Image 1 (cartoon, rainbow, N blue to C red):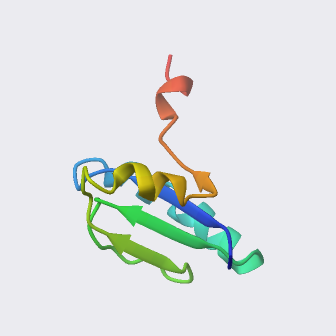
Image 2: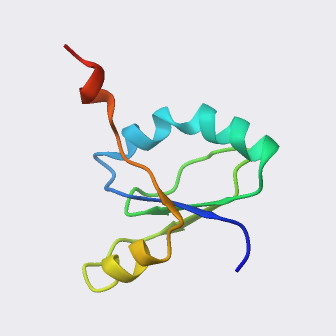
Length: 81
């Protein structure tokens, strides 16, 4: 139901990986409706993107992941040689 949900789970120490995707997510949001769900990274501005910030909990982590249509994660280490 509703727009696709792109999800990310992390912590304040790893949220910089999600911030790197910020410009890409902003361009995508200008073309396609979606909701970004950020769990555990804290709240930060991402103008133009519909974002739902949620606290991380071990009790709800699996259910939160099941609600994602798309998950994002850092892959920068794949390109570092």
